[in-house]
Image (cartoon, rainbow, N blue to C red):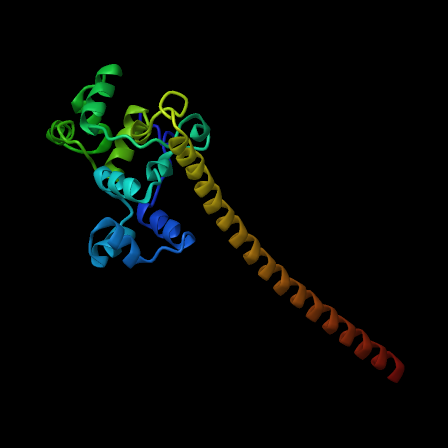
Length: 217
């Protein structure tokens, strides 16, 4: 049975775009830092999924572990921001063995042929959308495999600082969303106030007109 709650639905391109905007980083600056053309940056930011190796490289260059996007709020405080390179295919194969699930069953759950699973477990990287589906099928968030434990790995101040900076960046994104919602709510409230005032004025006009009619009769 597929567990859709094991991992959130993430639009990687939109999340990267939001992060760049908050940190006032232009597409050209991002392209220069990554050593790629701006046309490729545009493709990255418009794509909802991304290859894990590419996300690893972006995280390394910008010094932010973007695999955190795929964390749930219940585990985010339990792990560090340490970025580590892994062979995702080997990790998937280990999880298959640990859960006694056959390649054929996994293929059935994610809607592909068994030959595709054979190919995937040989790959070092994988598309984030496909990895999301596999994570749900195996009830294991493979995006966490790109992290190290803050208690066991973060032995110097720079790594620990990176961990807390990652948490800060996530909170900043959430703050921006909440602030935007508040502004929208205030705008809606102002509109409602204007409508109420208009209705009150119309009611008063009707009362005056009614009083004049009664006086005339």
